[in-house]
Image 1 (cartoon, rainbow, N blue to C red):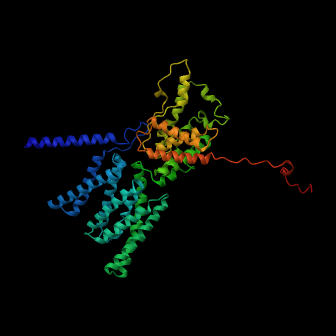
Image 2 (cartoon, rainbow, N blue to C red):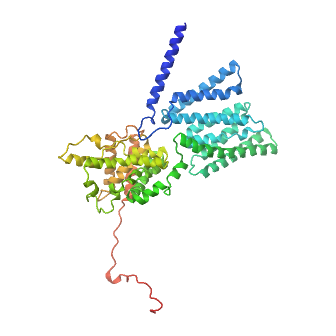
Image 3 (tube, one colour):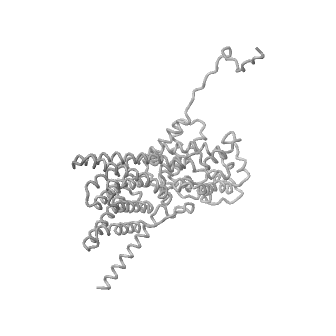
Length: 511
């Protein structure tokens, strides 16, 4: 009997270890590139089990230490954990192998339960002042609004249970957390979180007024509840603003607030790009506009696309003169690039490739968030530097190295946003070589570039579909047609009707 038990336990532990190793290998943030160092990596199974254990430890003193209550609590937490895992696998599959997202979600659940317990420890603290909305704001901004809804429902139930199975506590906690969640959907500035706090206050006030009418409360009781609703809204704002920067930095997440701050062209790195590499700066503006509109067309993060493409070529600041857009003395694309004429193709390709590593190093030195920084290496992926590779093939005086020696180091795009960035960069550069950019020719060019990247397996690691690619083609074609629109030629005035050239007014002395 003992041997059977030991063999069963050994088999269970080995199965769990294999599961952890398989999940670790699947993590999209692990081993993506030596350029992108991951700060935190805990496999999802360990995170899930750890969160369940911590929740059990937090709630155990509240329910008591009898064997039946311990078993009931363990079963409840097990069911809750299973429900979360199944929901994420079904409705939010992008988080299945994202261990940081699962860790953050679990941490938010623990913080929510801890906040409820802390408030419950003070008898004078009303359940209507418990700031569950804090957690839904954080989950909405850092993860996903649907996940925030689920977290809000669960924490509202916990709030009611810990306050003596109070329906009123569940009712107010649920609607106040939903108000915070909905109000934080379109947050763009930190002041918008304050606005979300006001929404929490008035929704809580309406809920308490309705409960007061239902239960026959006095005016004093209703006003007392509304006061605690104001405390609820204020705590939602203060705690959210305090925790948001910490969680953003620790879990490598970016919110719209941070993106708008990072995308300000008064920031030192972007100002350097504007002054030291003006050609790259103008290319960046066009590419970011193309990427933003394409992202909106397929439902991707358009703000992340725009800001990410602001930084995608910052590495060119190290040697701006080696890139064609900064060679201002050239009058056409057919003119020779004097600097590269002095180098053989292999050295020129190394100079071009170096802007990726230089860009990552520069971005890190200026504290650019990791989600934005990923656009620097991923917008090129492992693409071939065709111009210099073809030059090397045409030279017969030296042995041509394999094509892999003329490829960017990668990694390939891992998200829809970086796929869009890769395509926007290639499309904008290629469209400049067109002499007569009509709508049909522009569409043909865009389709050719998309097919080329697809056949080169650049999209293999990104969750992009053929339907998304078709919509991206449509968006790029429309945007490029607007950029290269046709203008009519204005006729010259007849010679006799030409106005006199401008002359300054005569001075007073001449008069």
